[in-house]
Amino acid sequence: MSIFSRIFSSKITPEVLHKALKKGEFVFYYQPEFDLKTGEVLGVEALMRWVNNKRGIVPPNEFIPVLEQSGLISEFTDFLLKQTLADLRKIHESGLKNVFLAINLSVVQLKQPNIAEKIQNALQAAYINSSFLECEITETKGIDHELLESDVFKKLQDLNVSISIDDFGTGYSSFDYLRSLKIKKLKIDQDFVREMFDDSKNQTIMASMIQLGHDLGLPVLAEGIETTGQKEWLQEHGCDMGQGYWFSRPLPIDQLLDFLQKKIQNS
Ligand code: C2E
Ligand code: CA
Ligand code: CA
Image (cartoon, rainbow, N blue to C red; front, side):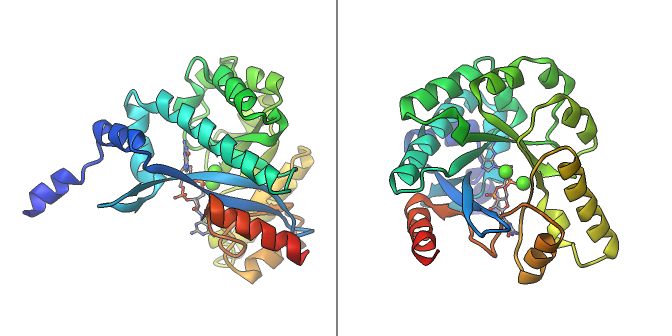
C-alpha cells in the first residue's frame, strides 16, 4: 500500500464514524474524581474511546470534531446518554449509591434544540435521579452569547442537572459566564497542574484560581494530577477535588467497578 493510499484509508469521515457507531465500536472509559481531603471517590467522568480493529483505541480529540461537523452528533448524544447512564446504574447497584456521573458536552451538543428533553428522557429511562448528572462544558470551545442567551442552561437547572466548567483558566471570557451561569464546580485545566513547578508564577495563578472558586462559593477540582508533589501542593492550598493518573487512569466500566470495590474494602 502506498503512503497516499494509507493516508486516504485512515481518514476519519462521518461515514466511517457512522459505521463504527452502528457496529458498537464506541465505548466509554471512566476516570474517578476524588475528594482531596478524605480520598473518597465522589464521581466518575465518562471519556469516549473508539475501539477499532485496525486503528486500535482512538482518542476523542481525533474523532469528536468530525462527529460535530457531521449530522451524526444527535445520534451520538443519544448513545452517550444511554450508555453512560446505564453504566452509572451499575455503579450505584454495586453499592456506591452516591457517586455522580460527569459527561462532556460540547457547545455543538448543547445547541441541539431538544438537548434538555433528551437528557430528561434518558434519566427517566435509566431510573437515575437528575442530581447525579453533571455536564462538563469547556470554556475554550466557546460558551458564546448565543448559548448563554438560549434557554438550555435554565432548562438544565430546572431539571436539577449540574453544569461544571472544564479546562478552567484556558478561556478568556470566564468572568462573563461565571456571573450568569449557575455552576457546580470549576475544573482547573491540566496544563496548569503539569507546569505547576516550572515557574513560581504558575503556583500563584493556581492559588488564585482556587481562591476565586472559593470566593464564588464553588468547589475547585484540579485535573491531570500525576505526582505526589502536585497532589500535596494542591491539598495544602485548599483545592477540594482531584483527578489524574496519580489516582487512576480512565478505566473501562468493569475495571472501574473493581477499582471502586477495592477502594471500599480498603477504607
Ligand atoms: P477533558 O474533558 O479535559 O478530559 C481530560 C483528558 O485528560 C482525558 O483525555 C484524560 O484521559 C486525560 N487525563 C486524565 N488524567 C490525566 C493525567 O494525569 N495526565 C494526562 N496527561 N492526561 C490525563 P481524553 O480521554 O483523550 O479526552 C480528551 C478530551 O476529549 C476531553 O478532555 C474532552 O474534552 C473530550 N471528550 C472526551 N469524551 C467526550 C465525549 O463523550 N463527548 C465530548 N463532547 N467530548 C469528549
Ligand atoms: Ca472533562
Ligand atoms: Ca479538562
